[in-house]
Image (cartoon, rainbow, N blue to C red):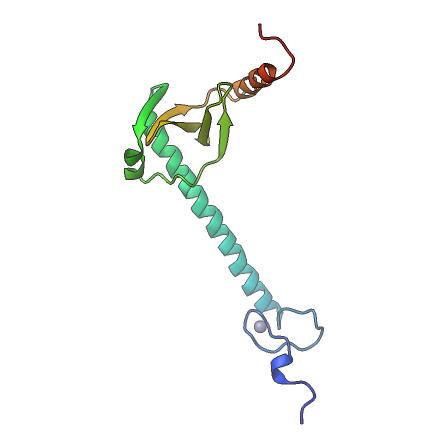
Length: 145
Ligand SMILES: [Zn+2]
């Protein structure tokens, strides 16, 4: 008869061999720990890379559609045709007028009517807080000029 059932013994989370020694150990040896951590890191790396690829492609699509224009209107199906991924964006910006823009880096869009988007390029970053200040002034106690 054995005291410890084999199934109860902790197993290495990399190779599943039983672990001997301290009960808080997760790996049977250093090489298993390294192998496991390397896999984990590469998984994290892949997640970041995939999201970054979507964002970069979205940015490039908006950039190409906008060209040298200040703003341009594009139908949803055209964006889809270029491979735009609507679920990926970097940030949102609500203007003083209450328009809610979705941005991929410096390029953004506003849905102006169903399936029709206005594409814009954000101006100098210094100008963005200005818009927010206007919104605050309007809602706050300060009189508009
Ligand atoms: Zn192991």
